[in-house]
Length: 536
Ligand SMILES: NC(=O)C1=CN([C@@H]2O[C@H](COP(=O)(O)OP(=O)(O)OC[C@H]3O[C@@H](n4cnc5c(N)ncnc54)[C@H](OP(=O)(O)O)[C@@H]3O)[C@@H](O)[C@H]2O)[C@@H](O)CC1
Ligand SMILES: [K+]
Image 1 (cartoon, rainbow, N blue to C red):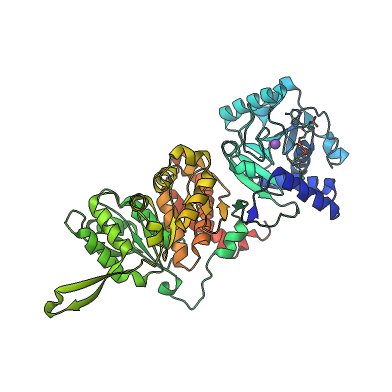
Image 2 (image 1 turned 60 degrees about the vertical axis):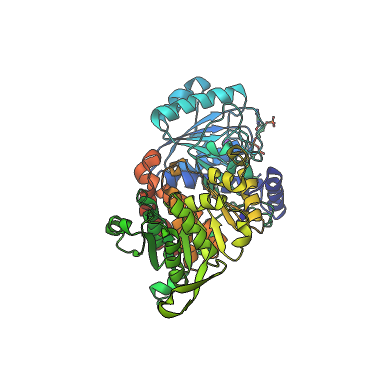
């Protein structure tokens, strides 16, 4: 994890780096080259034409270094300057700078149309809360070309006009497809409304010292964290040992949801996934998911089915390391009865007399590890004093703002206005891990930590993506990953899988099954040895 930083902390880190012997030119060189590498990678290694909008300060300097690095790799570089007519202040050799083509304001539209990539390096963390009119005009020109031709826009460090602390956005700012942030993650980029302007976020290391992790600061979930959290599998293990997951959900009209959850659990590495669903759902699900086993539950309409369903699960619960409860359960009365019985855990203590007709029931605490999603959260919101009743369970709740508003008995608007505080409040009040799915999804824990997803992807606004997330988290918990880390890893993997899926199906075309298809590749990139990098 790494703290999301405020500008003053970034400036302090820069001073510390300078005091440790780095020069400003070193930092700018590392920043610009890093940005160029990200652009090259996104462009698939092909060289084209880049248009850099360069401002007067160090952000513009970074942009010119990036242009120089791209030029060395065969790119043609067009530069439009705001209060800048040359590459002064940027550590670039004269021969390279001589080849830059400087663009007059009236030639900007034509230059933008001829560009394969446009870089916004006008203002960075030294920007003010309004943009000058010339910059607003230039951005409007570029935005029109971006819409017309789908030309990618890359923001350097921050989209110009975004306040790196508050996330406020100046009128006329340019939305980017990718923001390459230099050195440390700026907290404002992860807040609304800035998150609508950043596109995909990439963080590049330039050797700045990170501030010490503090529990109060929101922390970014990083690739390194997820690598460290993933379970390690031994050669001499077997499916039950690596993790068993029980997914409880489904109703006659909702069999897609538990199917997605089970598939995600299996794809994230759970050795055995069992679906506890009404009997009639088994045939349609089994054809699509041959790897999954089933615990057939009685159909919901029959009176008393809820309690019988719960009993069947209690009989099996010790065989599973984690549960996911909720996907596609619906909100009918047997569901209430079922979940009341499931979470109150009344076990059969003894059968007395002939035919065991007298049965004593004894209330026990629910102690399992479980992800509660969708209709399980709606049921939970109707219960009183549940945090106390379920205190021995290790739960991960995965609400969207509507579900969290019911759990906290507050308005959705309040949650959307300050999602991080709402998630923290919920985790503290409930004593459980809470994953709030809004913007940059966050994982809040009762110990006060708040882990923030690196991406906020509009492509994920599609039915079933929540079921996939619940399955990934449950699948990781089943493999022994602690609940908070499992939640954070699931959130991270969901973002990476979405980025991979978007390359194939795009933003609008993405559906939840695409995430499951992409998940093995996202996971392999974190888990498996990377022979493919050699010589790359
Ligand atoms: N700190 C670090 O660790 C590292 C930082 N790095 C990079 O440096 C960037 C920060 O650079 P920075 O401090 O030079 O500020 P920057 O954003 O370029 O803007 C300042 C210039 O813009 C001008 N200006 C601003 N707003 C304006 C407006 N509305 N209207 C008009 N003018 C306006 C302002 O003008 P002035 O106020 O001086 O008149 C000044 O000339 C950072 O984002 C990152 O890219 C990395 O290279 C290495 C590590
Ligand atoms: K910028």
